[in-house]
Amino acid sequence: MSVWDALVGQHRAVEALQAAAAGHGMSHAFLFTGPPGSGRSNAAVAFAAALQCAEETPGCGTCHACHTVLAGSHADVSVVRTERLSIGINEVRELVRRSALSPVGPRWQIVIVEDADRLTEGACNALLKAIEEPAARTVWMLCTPTVEDVLPTIRSRCRLITLATPTTDAVADFLHRTAGVNEALASYAARASQGHIGRARALARDEDTRNRRREVVAIPAQLTSLGACMSRASTLNDVAKQEADAITSELDARDKADLDAAYGVVERGRRPREYAPALRDMEKDQKTRAKRRHLDVVDRGLMDLVSVYRDAIAVSVGAPGTLVNEEIRSDVELLARTGTPEVQLRRIAAIFEAREQMLEFNVQPALALESMMLALVAPEVRAG
Image (tube, rainbow, N blue to C red; front, side, top):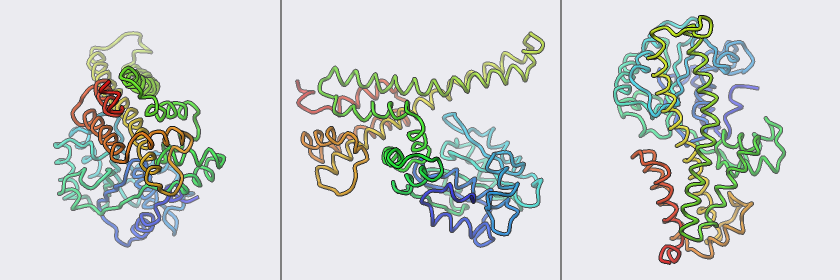
């Protein structure tokens, strides 16, 4: 199995990366763009493995170099991930310092920055200097949703690799082929994920994830009163917080154990003077991570809601093909009968407005969701 097999429905991008790995169109900096779930970071890691590959055909997936890159343990490949709201200048300065070092092995020093759209202004400026004056054997790989998410001066110095949303059939085939998921469940997960590979895996593997999504997509048909709007807003926020807390609590416990071990708290039974400020910094980071995770889960729920109203538009105009939410077709048809496509578009706009309020203007999710639910309910219900 080659390193390229995990890139679902990205034939053009794979061809470009294979050619670059073979020496045709190679650059010191690459910008991977594509919608959420398209596999930006997976493409960057696969390309890094191909560049370090020791075989005649780059990206074999079987040699030691490929294995260590894919496992995240290669000495010359650094992958930067963040659970924070942003990537600060201090983190980027450390990356720049590391990028200036000569690689340990015979090939490249590679730095992959996931979520490069979260770079602060200072971090962008620090990164720009490193990309403008790169070391001879250093390759930068930045991952963002769109080219507009990085400074023009940065993107102008990068080779652009654009990824597309994979088709439902491609995602379903990938789940069936690589994870042994039965065809019916694979088809459901592919449709419900709307091309998001990570989300599709979670839906295929975890019943709780499927149940949470069913709760969310059932909301539009339940908005029959103002009380129901408030209740569903609270439910969506609470469900998202529970899911986020389940993820972050495990990470928090691991961070605390690592900190205690680093300062010898476990062995010596006492806390050195430096421990308290380190603990405060860690707890601050954990709060930021928890907030970001909560927003990410809420955002995913909002995209599930959008899929229901898009299905209603498809039914109204008689569009061919299977609905994203085929399992609740009766609810979708009810929405289509009680609201024109223009009404559904206004509802979708209200969802995106709530998303912007939370992600861009730091509005509390509970308040943004309550306002959104009121905009989604039928006008006659609001008037009553």
